[in-house]
Length: 87
Image (cartoon, rainbow, N blue to C red; front, top):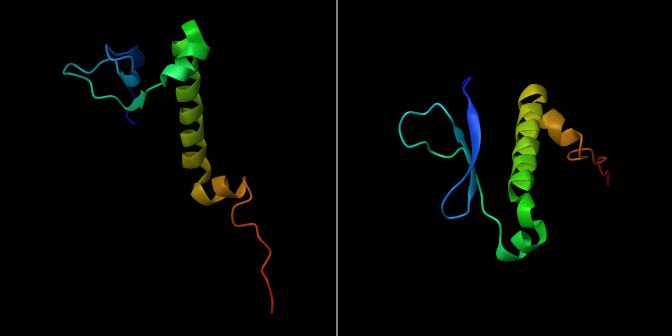
């Protein structure tokens, strides 16, 4: 992504989106989060806080993938670490 300002916005339909703040035209969401009615009943007023935490975690994970490469990232979770089986 280019170097821009981003904002987290709640749309009229209740979705929470991450979008470019400096987009002159109708901004297209980079990330969109929709919560179910059940999850909203648990969160109450914390909806935007939860969405912000989800977006931050996703950006951090994307940054790690970009920095370390996909293979190194997957290796942290034990993917591909299986010992070979000899018959």
